[in-house]
Image (cartoon, rainbow, N blue to C red):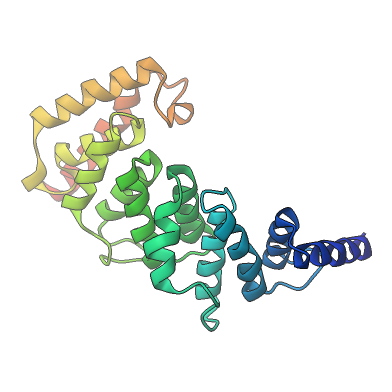
Amino acid sequence: VQQDKVKAFEWFLKSAKAGKIFSQVVVGLRYMEGVGVDVDLNKAAFWLYKKYQNDPESMYSKKLAIVYFQNLNNNNPVIDNLSRKFVFNELLPSLNIGDLSAVASEVHLNLDNTIEAIPLMEMAAEKGSVTSMGVLGSLYSVKHHPAYGDVYYDLERAIHWLKKSSKNSIGTGLSLIRIYLGSSGISYFDLEKADKYSTQTVELFKSGLAVDHHLYKGKKDILTETYSMAAAVIAEKDL
């Protein structure tokens, strides 16, 4: 089977060199994933960049972006045609919301590079990605994180993104409720806002239209756990 993949790669490479765009994409992806050939991110970028030049809005443009961050994670030399300026000023802005959010998730979760993922999630959130808004809200709201400490803690920024995504996400609505019930300190305690987001979150839950509805489906009272958690924090801090 491996020999078949090697042979197939050789044929795709010949076709790619002859100018066939589909083959160029296949060769780029195979260099990226190590299918029928050893992984070579520089060569992957070379062929995927050709596709980008012909069709910047292609679904494969996000693969080109991921190659850049994979290479960055491996501390390899800069790849030809993939300067940071090009990636952040041209390539990433050209991606649609879904692809940009997917690149951000790949960098954050699979490459475990939160420092690089944050500006990607900010870009995706600015374009309207509810997923990226929620992740940013969660990331910025955690103080004394076991892995990051207080490096990313920024409660004002967290509230900014949680508010924007709360109309479409039950989880971010619940996070806001906890904050306004005092879980993040007495200075943010606000029963009026807690009640506002409680009503909004319940209505969103009932509508079944939340992007994360599947995570809460079947729960009779989605606020019970949230109020209990907040109460526990408040009692512990003696607020």
